[in-house]
Image 1 (cartoon, one colour):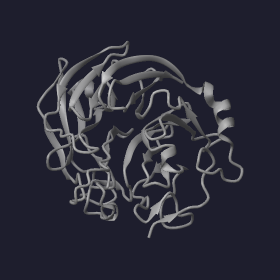
Image 2 (cartoon, rainbow, N blue to C red):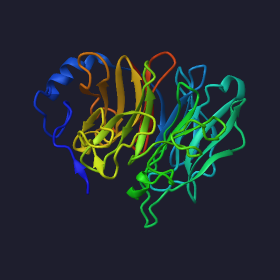
Image 3 (tube, rainbow, N blue to C red):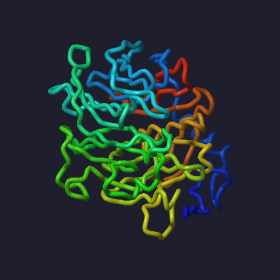
Length: 350
């Protein structure tokens, strides 16, 4: 049975909890927190992942085509390769990308993709501006529920402060997988850079870092080393979570939080999910910056200070669906749109 909390965190929601601040006040007090810098690239079709190279350029994936583009820090783009194994399958295709923290030495770039059989994590060397051969690190992540559903692929990749590679997987529309330790679906996974499983993972020999997830698509770390993740809900609650080793985040038993129950509660929620539908995530200036798909906006959530948990909405309906948010080496935020045609990479100043 699905349990839903009736008391929501303050902020934008279907109804404001006691003591919550109105939307008008949020917009009035927070609107100056972020401004548009420059459109860096356009003419893309459903860009999904974005990861920065050491010089400040970025690699951007296109979900449907499998193309990988280099977007230059001053603007403009060039296609640098195609992941041929990637299949445009429902919400799947070529999804997340991560650049190794050791890239200057080894040139490794990591990708999460949907193939004809599964979802998987691979890596390629990026040498002289081109992608090389594919090395498969982890395969066998389910891409469907076996009954024709092709949703909830997860797909975000990111290296944490310790140098480990984290990947988010969805439940592939079969919710029981999220609580099944033997399934890689509905989890946040933790791997060594070579694809092996760290010896200090919660279960020896298992890539699982946390479980009980429906569809996580955003990962980021704050200055204190805390890991954060965004999670798309079924219809009632979207979540921003602090991720802690070995914890259970409740899906499918809980959407949102269960108060004093056994599951890890969200830091904040959005309700209903049409308000947000979160994907990409970055941490900057004491806030979590969340790309909203259905909500067609960029949200910020204060994660420290006296106004912790305060939510604000920025650029509502200005860019359409926002898929990815990443912080550039110079401190700016780069976002990608996900509207299906003439999608863009935009630089924001915070």
